[in-house]
Image 1 (cartoon, helix red, strand yellow):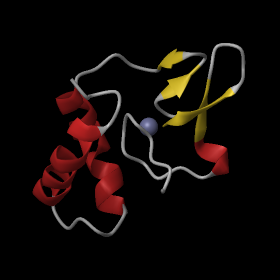
Image 2 (tube, helix red, strand yellow):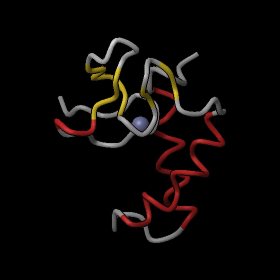
Image 3 (cartoon, helix red, strand yellow):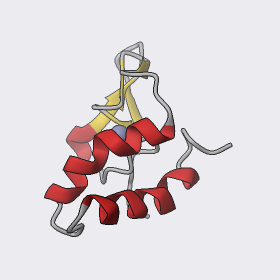
Image 4 (cartoon, helix red, strand yellow):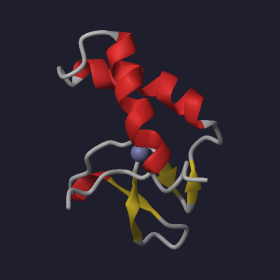
Length: 84
Ligand SMILES: [Zn+2]
């Protein structure tokens, strides 16, 4: 299975993993979301989606903001951080 950040849905390669408080690698979250053992920012799923839109547009796959938002709304509720 592909390794996707359980907070922002980003596909992670070796260098993208987050870090735990003791400096060890955390493979569940990317380095942008999770470092020093905590999330860089406490936010809601909706806020995360809004801040991720530019990156998803850059990806080429999504043509409009609505495209990107709808795609994330499908993926995010299944990610560990947002799962209720
Ligand atoms: Zn992330």
